[in-house]
Amino acid sequence: GGGGLGDRLVGLIATQLIAAKLGNRFFIDWRTPDITRYVTSEYFVSPELSDQCSLLRCVDRPKGVEDLLKKGRGTRLFDVPAICNSTLVNNHNASANLNCMGCINSQSQTPCSAIQANHEIAQFLYSNPTVSAATYYDDVLCMWQQLYHHTLRKTPYIAGIIDRLLARAAGRPLVGVQIRAGDNWMVAGQEYDGGFSSLAQIKIAVEKIRLHALKAFPNAVLYVTSDAPNMSALLANRHYIVYDYPVSHIDRDFPDHTKAFVDNILLAEHAQRLYISSYSNFGRVMAMVSPADAYSLTLEKLDKRSMVYKLRVEHPIVGEQLPDPCSRASVRMPFPIVAIPAVPAVPAALPSTGSGHRVLILLMLVVLVPISRYLWRASSHL
Image 1 (spheres, helix red, strand yellow):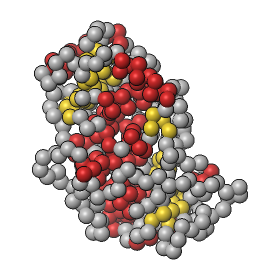
Image 2 (cartoon, rainbow, N blue to C red; image 1 turned 180 degrees about the horizontal axis):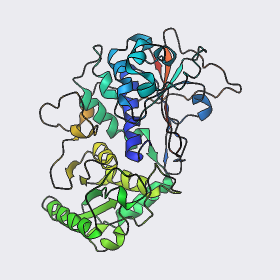
Image 3 (spheres, rainbow, N blue to C red; image 1 turned 45 degrees about the horizontal axis):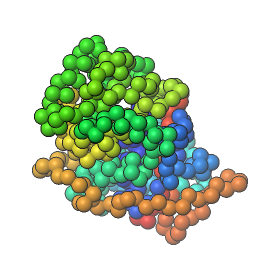
């Protein structure tokens, strides 16, 4: 599968950063589950437009695009029909790593290429000799800080719920706690064990966090989110706020994902400190979007540069983490919003955007299970 909400947003931000760094245009096609009840975006594009594009798949295979990003040059960098026939693909074993899906539209002149991704693949572009790696962490963290302010915006439905929950804090400092209890607590997978075998263990961990947070924020109230059940009953006192709504996982066929978006956006935007399950991308997303300090569940302060990818990042972390990454970023923020092209009445090649320009689409798609598809479209001028 493609993972949960956090995994998908990692792919989204990586793609947006690649588009920004290359000077490309950027669109999103998110098909299933339908998230328009929860967030809206000026970047959403019609599926009919994206269906015209060539497709390169690297879901769960970040190594498949590593050489393409590190060694690509000029307009061929994301020219999928050319990529599918290139020596780079052949050297990487296309069936195991790239799976070009038959190079859809490879016989047409459609300047539109789709790439599926659910990993932090932007790091490979910063190893390209034509791109400076000096601002990698500032660039990616700056992009994250724009996620809920610019790229995806909460709907009135989500905003209303968040306002009602914040009112329960009654002006007290708000500290966020995110606990990924593990896949054994819900139908989400069979790989991750958060280390909590009982609700009693979770309550002990939360109480330790509260005592630690009170040293910096006296009279703080803790907003707690978890994939464990019955948290509102477990933490039913004035020191805690829990959104009492069914837990869902976006990679499975749950009917409603309100809680996932409410909890993630609320804590990213309003928590004055965060305590997260550092292996969970759901928690990492909140920490990277938020300007607040982040701590692990074992009370260790986290460097947000270490959160951009759960696997190893080849760019070393040097010096202390500094605030306001956007002040040092090399990409333009906020990312410019451009007009979404009209969908042709009859499928046809997309119009060229100018001499030497191409359209880049990065798409997340996983078959067999109902999940999201991410689409990014851009006209590169490299």
